[in-house]
Image 1: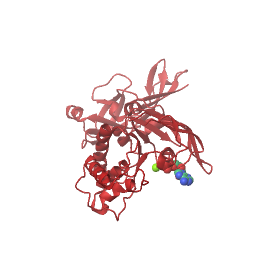
Image 2: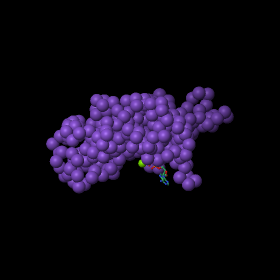
Image 3: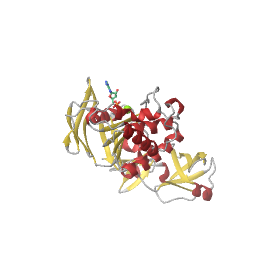
Image 4: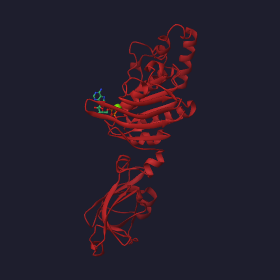
Length: 350
Ligand code: ADP
Ligand code: MG
């Protein structure tokens, strides 16, 4: 089921929660809504689900106007961060719930319901917990059961609002990989809300970056990370170092202390550089290299984090590979040269 969102607006009092959202999600896609708290992610998801109505704009499901349909008729399954399972029902009863409340005319037989519950338990790889109660499950297991319950009605669209938000980091990581594989098998059109950049970049086919009720960028994880459309996206998707320099005759001077950089016609440049795009060397590098002193080294991780202070007084956060670290053997307090292998975003003032 494809979903089309056309110029959706939503106000709460005088507050613009959504200001003209346009988006097309293809059948079978897994799309993440990524943005800080309050950016409008949940509101947009609720409007798509039919739990909330927009002030203006259109929602099309498979090309048809969805607004005429109530939430329960839109064929969507939900999982929320705090979507508590029914505590007094066993896991199997929880999963069966959506089927048991269907009108008699369409409700499957008890036998069919039991078979479907069994299938779903196997699907979320928890077929041994059917008789347990939610309090006897871990947080991660509960969210998988919540997903099984959402899938019971065979939804055409799956809406997940920070489904792993309340779980600890290790379980979150496992579950997002699990969700990715799960989606690859089932291919249900899925919208996944998160404020966690890593989660969005790892799970989604495409990422929608939201800020203050507007879309900043829509793109594949690679596009939004490596080719951010705005400073907001750049900053939101990971660490970045900012430098102010001067450009004269096509040559860049950082820290504008060189006499050339003060020449007439010089333009101010702002450079945004990701930590892993720095090269560190003991011998002087080609321009524009910065002389800096190493202030802190943390090798405990997949990359080695190095904080430096440039001679012009700027702090720099760099990351080098473990191999580069072993080869260079940098030490705290030593003076090195830093240069940028790649500039993610360059901003000129004219
Ligand atoms: P997100 O899910 O990205 O954190 P929300 O969509 O929940 O953001 O909220 C967007 C903004 O709209 C927030 O500033 C929030 O306070 C406001 N908001 C959301 N729902 C309501 C409501 N029912 N009444 C008033 N303001 C609301
Ligand atoms: Mg929210």
